[in-house]
Length: 427
Ligand code: HAM
Image (cartoon, rainbow, N blue to C red):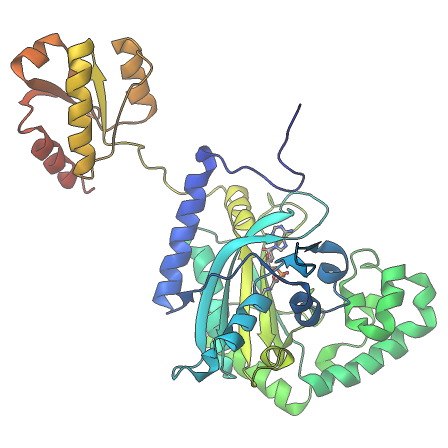
């Protein structure tokens, strides 16, 4: 039998997982600074939730969901995104009653979409996302965008482009929709079958079509910008003014529509402009969703958020050739010669670890030279050498691997000496 990781998924091995942990540490730190609190929702939900909130006509719902019937005959879906579950939780737990609105939440976890695998596109990927629910202040739109930019900056990325648009409110969307139908209808035969379907239901999606993206009618389509009513235009202007105050450069793209149906007003994406980055350049996408809580029976609770995948964050770092600084794996490697020395070594190992000192020993009975090589590979800061003579004298030889200096230390003083040394080095 020849088992392989399922298509579109990947094993994150220890040689990579430390980078994920670093990225997640940056994320947690930035969220803390902005006062976003973590929420963890289940990885599956009722299928209906996504159908209703993400939208029946979206690619995500029509083609990409991992849907199954459970043993109780209910239709369940592995979450393709995090906003619908978070809004569900906000309504279910009556977070709209919390005294401090908006409620500011973040999440990191696996999402599932049955997509064609390519660089930067997976069937299981990890999204970090935030949602600020319960405020209609343009300043929070700017805060959400600033938070996303901060995460990328802290990861060392500089080749970034923020693209922003306003999708307006329900009224502008309706008049724009009518204009789009009028624009595409006479030529709809030239479009793919999905677009034909989209024409009456959701013509905005035609602008985002992966098949017909280059059709000239898409470029000449009526722009939503021309259909924004006064209120929506004023809202958008305020969001961009806040971005300017915060020195966050942006580009307005009137064709930015996003792939999910729940958006209104502010929509944005952050792209990598690094040449080394593959065909998919979007690192992060988000926007405002004012009607979502009401759509599932909650009160009016305007929200805004974004999501980014850790996969694409790390790919962008690779493309820009920036990396997290690797830390040595351990502080002390214990090298022993002979059975008695091994016993003493294991005892000392336990004491080191109990004091929070990262330590390890050989478990494969290798010769001393091979043990020293392991210590080098693991970039141990210190090596403890114990032979028969040391056992007899109840001492160990402590070697500093940076300057190769070594000294004999009694076993009773050892832990303190090592701890002091590490403190001096700033660990
Ligand atoms: P989305 O644009 O569908 O939005 O996805 C957001 C981000 O998730 C993308 O920019 C990308 O980084 C990542 N992503 C999406 N699909 C894949 C994939 N197949 N493989 C790797 N990464 C992927 C949402 O999901 C919204 N829930 C964002 C949001 C939050 N809007 C408001 N709040």
